[in-house]
Image (cartoon, rainbow, N blue to C red):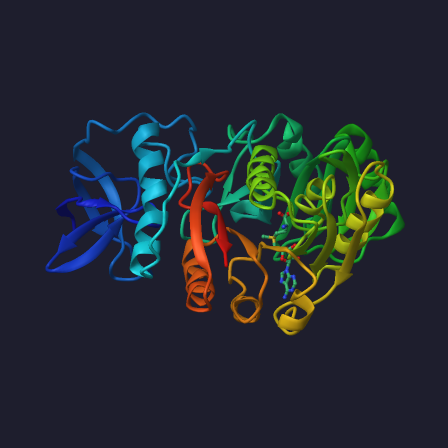
Length: 413
Ligand SMILES: C[S@@+](CC[C@H](N)C(=O)[O-])C[C@H]1O[C@@H](n2cnc3c(N)ncnc32)[C@H](O)[C@@H]1O
């Protein structure tokens, strides 16, 4: 049944929100003030609508730059003028903090798209009529939208889509989809494939030929080495880190630099810093130019890569890194006594248990980095209730065209 709606505003997930019979309904790819024709989406939550036509467009609407926009699920917003989009993204942070009654300054949004995304996960599947599809997941669906170009990728990923198509062809088997994660290392593409069966010698020979053709630095399967032409390296500050397969890396180089610059600014004068959820060390390796570092992460490969990179970089203060599950074994208040600043950058679920231990500590400066404002607000509330004062929050936009927003905040006591 076709309905006509007037969109009220864009919600925190990037969909237009309208009132229908007193209930909020969500219409992707629409803007506040627009009159739109929509229909229900079978198999989805009853509050979702599919956009059929924009009858009266907002003056803020612009033409999307990607031909796959609104079909591919990678981008939610390309149809909104940049200044309004940026204000909306900052407001997500402002409104979420206000809901948690956290009273603090929110700085202007830092644009950290830079040269673009340096890591992607593509999906491959044999579709109808036995045709191979390689691309991104469709919006709100498991369908694959085949793509041969993506305008938001960094130049380091040029050739990545072609490489994924070429690798999928021999590796795919009917009924078994593949996930192909590709990272732009300084010296080639680092590829990890999930979903393929065990590889025979003949297949490895085929993959080696493709690795040469598509400038792969390394190919792994479920994190296990298949072939390596050269160890994939990324430059972090003055250090060169050999990437462990599948370890976390910030989505854009500019995002990593923006977050690390804020962290360094907030930790000035600290002599010994704990870097919790350190990954391969984008903060630790920069902070070590001035301060002694103790770094912790549950990913043993990332921790080893960080320690090795620190040991082979001259001019750094001592860096110690330890593999530790901080959800099960958070740093306790007595361990935290050693530090005059603590940085924590947890995954999306936040770091509730670690925040509780920090709240009970005497650490004078805590710097939180977050990719999820809702869990950040929960953890910040714990710190504030424990006696910390929140000095300010800076939102950082490295996932341009999506509702994801990162932030850095400083707490003092
Ligand atoms: C958002 S990433 C941040 C990594 C790093 N700070 C960076 O900027 O690249 C979150 C990190 O938390 C780590 N992690 C996830 N669960 C963990 C846990 N239970 N204990 C410790 N580290 C964990 C991941 O391995 C990942 O490196």
